Length: 312
Image (cartoon, rainbow, N blue to C red; front, top):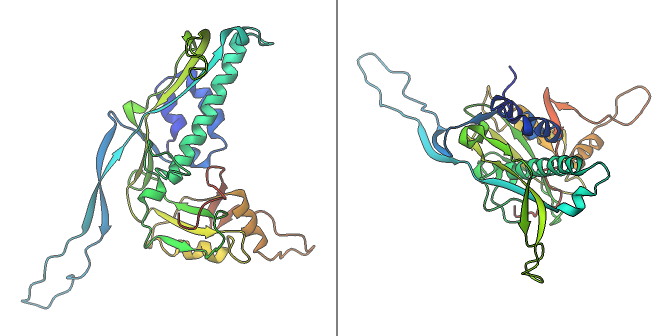
């Protein structure tokens, strides 16, 4: 069954001004196209996360009782945050655009949505990390995953050239995009506004500009600690890149019956995986770029960095 994503929510809201723009923008962001998404009425809700299942106490002898057992749970607040991108352009400049102001406005609108989706995709991984994410945005996988038990260390030793690979299970009870205010994603009409283009050097100088804004309320739910595994410290050091062995180690972290929907990595990590393999074709040609491991699709994203620190 295909899970609803951000585009489906935009369509359901009937916002024709943003549907086409989002459709174009998310095609290069697999975490957005594959990720389950749900709208909520407000901006937050609480979710109960099971951190342990009740075991033991299932067998007993006749005329003997058993001790009660229970699962362990953690209550988490899932919040959506204001996401607001804006562009401004001198009206006199836009009006002189070769194809007219309307074409220029459409070009800028397309760019702001594409840039916005890049920002949201990065936040998905890095969350509130000050270097790679945004402290004012929603917590990402880095903030929410079990960094003790659901991680594989690739052992890279060179700082500043590291990367991560994320194995993610999407779904209503697992990892999910959450869009507040009933999933509203609005690209406002371009308007004319008087602005101060250089408030520092010319605080009194004004001009008439076209102004347009994108407004949404994204958030992220990691509904189970068993929904995400990270492979970290993948570097350019010898034998410290991505391999099938590392991916299978990561898969072994998931409980039986839980299979991630996707393996998300950078293009560099994908090439490391390819070169780690031995070509088995009769011609001796190099191994092709991998598209799956163990039946799980491997998807490349630009939202993961190749310049992570080892401490991340």
